[in-house]
Every structure is written in C-alpha cells, then in structure tokens.
Image (tube, helix red, strand yellow):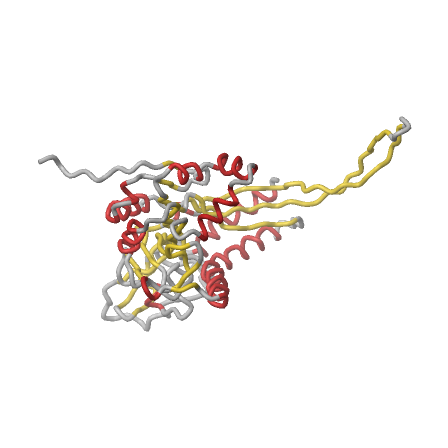
Length: 359
C-alpha cells in the first residue's frame, strides 16, 4: 500500500499574518481539523516590543478666502499636529523556548463556545455568561497578561497550574482540543468559525514596560511615550466552506457590502438566526519565553525557593546559565529554562537608550 500522507488543507495568510482556511474537509472531519491546528501551532507568533515617541507642535498658517462680493480676505489660524520622534521595534519572539503548550479554557470562563455570544459550560450545561462574569473575566485577563502568566491560569491559580507537569497540553476544560474540533465539525451553522489563538507568556510584561519607559526617560526625552508588546500572526481560523463565508473573508467585500447597507443585515442574520453564525474560541497554543522544567532532586539541595513568583524582574544576573534550579513543586525540583526578563533588559538597555538619543 502507498505510504500514509497527512491531508494538506488549503489556506491563505491574511494581512495580519493569521492563517485562514475554508477547506471543506476541515469543516467535516474533527481529526483533520485537529491535525491542521497542531501543524500550524508549530510556528510561533511574531512578538515584538514596540517603542514610540512623539510630541505636539503648534503652528500658524495664513488662510485666504473669498467672500460673496469677490473680496479676498486673509487671516491666520493656529493648528496642532503630532510629530513622531522615534518608532522602533525589538524582536522578542526569538527568545521563545521549547514547543507550544496546547490549552483549553475552564468551563467557568466566559468564551465563544459555538454561538455569537459568550457562554460558560459545555453541552447541556452551557448558558449565557452573566455580565458580572464577563467583567470579572476581562479584568483577570488583563492582569494575567500583564504578569505574563499562562493563559490557562485561573484567578485561584496555584504553582502547579502555572507550571504543568505535562509538557505539551493543559486542558482546563472538560473537553480536549480534539473534542472541541469535533463539536465545530458537527455544527450545521452557515457562518461558523473556529479560532485557535497563539499567546506568549513567561515574563512580567508590565514590569518590563515600566523598566523600558524609565530607560527612555533617563535620556531626558520629555515627549509622549508608548511602550507595548505587539503580537501578530497569532491566529489560525477555520471558517465555513460556502460562497458567503469566503466573500466575508475579503476586506474589500465587507467595505462594498457596508456601503450598500447589506453588511448590517448579514451581521443580524449571523447573530440571531438559529443556523446563522457560530464562533469557537476556547483553545490555543502557549509559547514560553521562560518556563520551569522538572529535574531530578539532588541529595544535598538547599531549601527550595517559591515555585512561582509575581516579580520576574530579577535584580542580579544569574551566576550560571539561563537553565538553572529555580524551586520545587509537588512533583519535585524544577529549574528555569529560557532567558529571564532581567537578563534580556540588561542586554537591550543600551540599545534602547541609543535609539532614543539618535532620533
């Protein structure tokens, strides 16, 4: 018999770098969809630190106009414009270590689970998420992202949740990634979409942004500063295989439909019709800049440090390498693998300062 070959689904890459597919087989076979997601998860997202600086300038210009009698008048007016001083990006994604961890959301977390509104639960226990639940989840997501915690970590997290023993999967949901893929494929909705999100974690991003801002201020720059971590090429989306769904994947089609006042009716159909639209956004891949790995305990080890810390900005560089003992867990000793944000910052601090001063 011929050698087995995996199914090669058709797809395209959007302007933001996301992978989009309308392949009919991915909409019918959960195993094919599952393999498609795993295949594209092998490519990490683009992750950069973007630094911008600008200031306002007020200018005066002479404006000439003619009145109804044909007389010409001149007057001066003031206007303000933003002037960019610097805009540069540093590739942080090159520091990602290891393979991605595939994760699913908790059943109690508000998420898109097959409808056009946020829900909690699975199967018969699914219900619309309450406003208080959505508000709490949104606040926790912002806090968790800023601290660089893994995406599967809930508000009541422990060190074991933040550092899983299984290296490749963390399923906080009652369903696995494959089961969610099957749920999508069995749906008969006309405008459905399955979204797999790639997230980067492991560093205290809020602390790192504050350190970068302080470095910029140390150059005596007093303009407006923007320091953010930006992620692109971070989604793998599988959408329905029909003419309307394919058309809506094109931006220019949406623009034309909006100008013709047709697009609002499509949105209403997608949201309220029983077989209109559905969205699945309950899983993804997590890519570590720094994470812990279990190691065999040594006989003469000292007392372990805490297994997980909120403050990642270490004051002193490590004495050995970036892979060193870090602490303990319920399953034994562990070590940090990857570059600490303190190390990264010391490597790039001078470059950031020079980029601002040479504006």
